[in-house]
Amino acid sequence: MGKPTGFMEISRVENPYRDASERLRDFDDLHVSQPADARRAQASRCMNCGVPFCQSEFGCPLNNLIPEWNDLLYRGMEREALARLLATAPFPEFTGRVCPALCEKACNLESEATTNRDNELYLIETGFERGWVQPRIPRQRTGRRVAVVGSGPAGLAAADLLNRLGHAVTVIERADRAGGLLMYGIPNMKLPKAVVQRRIDLMEAEGVRFLLNTEATPEITNAFDAVLLCGGAKRPRALNVKGVFAVDYLTAATRAVLSGGAPAIDARGRHVVVVGGGDTGNDCVGTALRQGCASVVQLEMLPAPPVDRPCGNPWPQWPRTLRTDYGQLEAIHRQGADPRIYETTVKRLLSGRIETVKLKGFDPIPGTERVLPCDLLLIAAGFVGCETATAMRFGVSPDPRGRMMPEDGSHHLRDKLFSAGDMRTGQSLVVRALADGRAAAMEIDRYLKEGAQ
Ligand SMILES: Cc1cc2nc3c(=O)[nH]c(=O)nc-3n(C[C@H](O)[C@H](O)[C@H](O)COP(=O)(O)OP(=O)(O)OC[C@H]3O[C@@H](n4cnc5c(N)ncnc54)[C@H](O)[C@@H]3O)c2cc1C
Ligand code: SF4
Image (cartoon, rainbow, N blue to C red; front, side, top):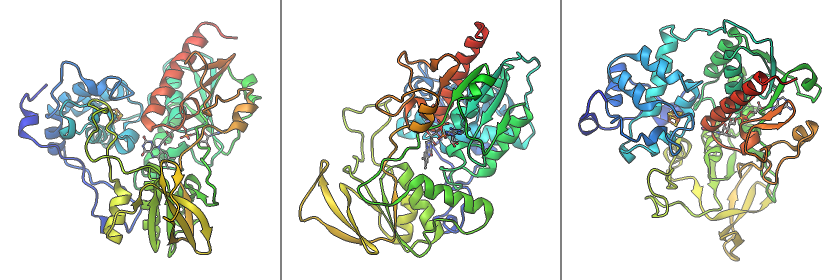
């Protein structure tokens, strides 16, 4: 710990959002970064605790060596700090932007936690700017060939590590661009697509092959020594009424940002209702506002979470408390009120409107019906698992929760076949998908070394 009194002298300062009235006019990065001296001061707040919960199982799933790189950053040794970060973190430019920072919630400083996520982002972006991040091409090749199906964070993390270990890796992706939900799902203002493409280009330069617009079929198992399925868990939970699924809407929005054309599903001038009060719903709110919707509301079946931690949810657990995310803040700025309506669901669609009803638990309360204007209904009600068709094609049945999780908790399904990421665990987080992809890569490496046929 470079500065023992750092946390007492310096307050936590996060990378601020751009002003709402400005950022609502574009799909550019939400945040403004801070200069080097501000970042070093923030890093000085890390206390290098005897038990660093930030890198424990309560904190970072990648077990990032947070106190080490915060200390090096405080001392102005950015290059060394980046090297310690990259020892465990494959793509800090993604987690530095979209990770909910589990480490910060487990920090001993609690609500005044060290700004690990912003520090991590500063280190990797400094590395790119100064040319420290260069293709790392393996010196030796093993002659073993691995196919990774799906190019989301799990597939990319596995491909990256397997390639470093000397195996020849081919990533098979059905979409026209690599990145999975990093590319088509998470909106551009949270994760600019140029940042995703920059990493794909780097991986290509390192020797990873990407086959885009390609549906993986079981025949690939004949051509490779191991196959890792990382197909995600995007099967949406349907409702009793018809609407547009959130990922379809967000994908169309990103395609329009990338092409400069009009989105195939456009919220412009429309009254938008988003069903689902979670993070995906929030991304829909932010996107609809940027497209120029007439109004937006967000329906949530559950009651509003408490403002403070309930007693059954102590530190260092993730706090299940009320969060107001960027999209909701923007709706408050534009409409003057929080877009969220709690304990409410859609009862039926009417022409240009919807009828909602209040809930007690999951039961509608008679007489609480309300009509809202609605000409675009977006469904962000969660995900129910991986695509059954892909699983079945490879001869594996998903478990009752829609996961391809081997019974022994490993990543090895059978023979040459492995699974990782959301496809194995259910819909989760980028950082967890990265950690799972890396764990699967290590298992595959052991399998190949043990002389698989
Ligand atoms: C709208 C939205 C916003 C999110 N925001 C955040 C956030 O801010 N922070 C965060 O931490 N997490 C966020 N998440 C969750 C996070 O994106 C996922 O947990 C993560 O992307 C899962 O990674 P994955 O690699 O397992 O799968 P995915 O990212 O889903 O990638 C799977 C890939 O496999 C491909 N594929 C599937 N089947 C086949 C096949 N048969 N052949 C070829 N290719 C195939 C798909 O096309 C896809 O590209 C968000 C999720 C959504 C839906
Ligand atoms: S990846 Fe997430 S949890 Fe891990 S150090 Fe970075 S911000 Fe924290």
